[in-house]
Structures are given as structure tokens and as C-alpha cells.
Image (cartoon, rainbow, N blue to C red; front, top):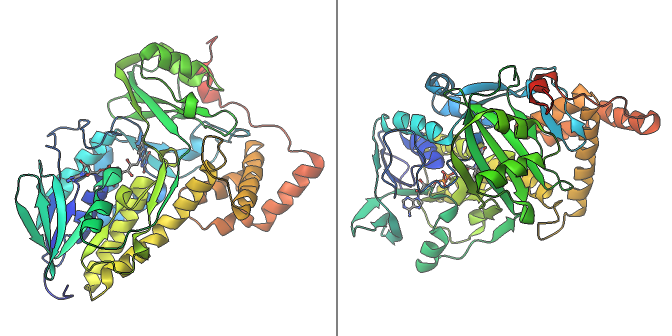
Length: 452
Ligand SMILES: Cc1cc2nc3c(=O)[nH]c(=O)nc-3n(C[C@H](O)[C@H](O)[C@H](O)COP(=O)(O)OP(=O)(O)OC[C@H]3O[C@@H](n4cnc5c(N)ncnc54)[C@H](O)[C@@H]3O)c2cc1C
């Protein structure tokens, strides 16, 4: 692949990772063809190729910054389309050791339905120079032909290209295509705590309910949790989560009684008083899975993998979109510098710099669950105990502990921040003299108490 002159780029999959990659590749007069198997709806609607589309999707603050860098004005565009800005510092959050404090300012996340998110970006990316999104185009094969790639479609046609970016998600067929091409197999790492999601949309939240959202965190002890987030059109997504045998059901009555089992009544009350819009949607493909393509010694030129096709995370931690946006920024930098021989493998190695931390966070947390196969390593267990300690301090009003945990969670700071000496001193003090009063249930939830 020459580093000079415009390239022909094919992106497989027009979901978020594919759209971000296409936006990144739309430079230097490149022609970018996005091949998507679904016939895409003209309006923001769930679709078959993105079965998780009815579940809540937020992106971390790092993701918001990355999107803004990739496509300036993204935040405003999402807000204009109806996204709700949520200051996570004011978000009622029942964590493993109690309620986290809500008085401080925190990182912003935008809350909107997943179909709207995709719709806004699809419109934006389709308007970029050199980009074409071809729908109803299922890719069925990938073959090296001289210095190019021949991308085979289900209708029998072939697209010739210089660079292929696989963004076809968890169901990516790339391992099969590589095997057919005689390329070595990539090691795959998996950790699956067996999380299931069930989500229902509601309108007409009870008056007096003043919270920006509610999180009842799932823990290895409870194995269940839930979340309520506002979305466009004055509606709320109420989600129940559970692991293994505790996964929430699809039927409306079962869903509502599941909400009543959660460690706080807020979500059950919200669902009881608000008006349901549509059915309960469930989703259970949530395991962490990472393909180590960067370790394949004979990795072919001109082939990249991004998004869930490269590394899919347990979605409970909200990392996938952010990581895909960060990968797209690395792709854009590489294309702007001009690709030289061996570049695609080097870029895959660079992707590990954005994948490794969220992967370590989500897998080491998931290995605490009795539903996961495998055990934490000693360093994971020690780090886990320390973050438990910080979480306990935060639940007893230590804003410093809360702030560093939020920074690391939003991928805005190094985990080294967790080891600030002042936090060590606070933990020691708490051990010796007690943790002090626990943070009270936020007053914003008063309207969601059974007697209210
Ligand atoms: C329940 C759930 C909740 C989630 N919540 C969050 C969250 O809150 N925050 C967050 O950051 N992430 C979340 N995620 C993860 C997020 O959905 C993904 O990380 C994100 O969609 C990026 O995925 P992707 O574009 O790589 O793949 P996908 O979204 O899976 O899209 C793959 C695309 O490729 C197309 N495709 C597949 N095969 C072919 C083919 N052969 N030819 C042509 N097209 C093909 C599909 O039709 C689809 O359009 C969640 C995931 C789940 C399952």
C-alpha cells in the first residue's frame, strides 16, 4: 500500500465504529465505501443488524471529547436532535457500599436512544466528501488480490480496495476469512459474567421526580441492578440487569416484579407511575471478547479491525463507543501521516493503547462475579480490593475518592490517580476511627419512594 495519493477504503459495517472509521478515512481525497448488510431506516429506528439498539447507550466523557475531535460540533448536533445532557456528579448512584455523593460537578454524558445516536452520525458521515454508504450489502468474503483486497458481496459482486476496515461488530466473520486466506489465527480472550439486559421505554415520569437519572449498580453480591436514563422526547429508558440465573425476563409483569427486587425502590416506582411505551426488549450477548490481531505475525497489509469486531466489552461499563471513537482518531492520524509498509499491523498495535485499560477494568471487575469462568490474578484482586476501599470512602462522603474513581472510569485519567497518598491516609483513618456517616439517599428520589 502506497503512502502517497488517495486510497480506496472499504469499511464493513455502518454502525458506530464503522461510521467513525469512515469519518476518519475521509481525508486526502480518499474514496470511502461503507458496506452495510441492513437496509438502513430513514428515521431513527431499531434495526436487525444492531440487536442491542433498544438498550440504553451512553458514552463516557472521553468518548464525547473524541467525537468532538473527530467530527467537530457533534455534541451540539446530538443536543439539537434531543439528547439529554446528564451531569454525572448529580446522578443518584447506589454503589456497592451505598449511595455516592451527588453534590459536586462531574463529567457530562449525553443520553439518547441508540437509534438516534446512529441516525445523527450516519447523516453527518454520509455528507462527508468521498464517503458512500451502500446499504443491503452483506460482505461474505475477503481475498487478497495482488496489492489490493477483493471484498465479496452476497449479491455476487466484488469491490476492489486498498484498505479494508472491519467494523462488523461482535458477529464479525474476520476469523473465518483470515483462515480461508491462510493467515495465522489470532488468540482470543474472553470473560463473560453472563449479564442480561431488559429495557422498557416510559413517558410521563411522575411529577416531582427531579433526578437526572438513577443507577442501582449491579454487584457480585446482589447480581442484579438497574438504571433509568432520560432520552429524547421527554421519555425514560428503564433497564434491569442481572447475571446468570438472575437475568431479567422479557414479559412486562416479570420485568416489573424484577424491578421490585432491586436494592432500592426508585426504578420500580418510576415504572409503576410512568406510562410504558412499547414492549420490554432483552439482550444477552454481553461477554467481554478481545481478538489479539496485533499478535498475528503474518498480518496482511491493508487490513484493519475496529470496534466490537476487535474488542467487545461487557456493556455495563459503557466503554464500546468511546473506544471505537478513540480508534478512529488513531486511524485518522495514521492516514494523515501517509501509510507505509507494515503500517496496518503497527496501527493495530497502537489500538491496544486505547483498548487495554478499559479491557483490564471490565474483565477484572467481571472476574469478581461467581457467574464468570476464571479467577482474578493476584494484582487484579489487590487492585480490586483497593477500589472497593475507595468506593466505600466515597459512599461515606469522601469527594476525592469519588473524583478519582470517576476520572478513571471516564478514561480521563491514569489509574495511578487511585493511589494518591491522601487517599491512603483517608483509608487508614477510616479503618482506625470509622468511615463516618453514610451518604443519604438523594432527595431527588423522594418522589420515588413507595409511600410518596
Ligand atoms: C446491551 C448493550 C448495551 C450497550 N451499551 C453501551 C453503552 O452504554 N455505551 C457504550 O459505549 N457502548 C455500549 N454498548 C456497546 C456498543 O453497542 C458498541 O460498542 C457499538 O455499537 C460499536 O459497535 P460496532 O459498530 O463495532 O458494532 P455493531 O454496533 O454491532 O455494528 C456492526 C454493524 O456491522 C454490520 N454488519 C455485520 N456483519 C456485516 C457484514 N458481513 N456485511 C456488512 N455489514 C455487516 C451490522 O449490520 C451492523 O450495522 C452496548 C452493547 C450492548 C450489547
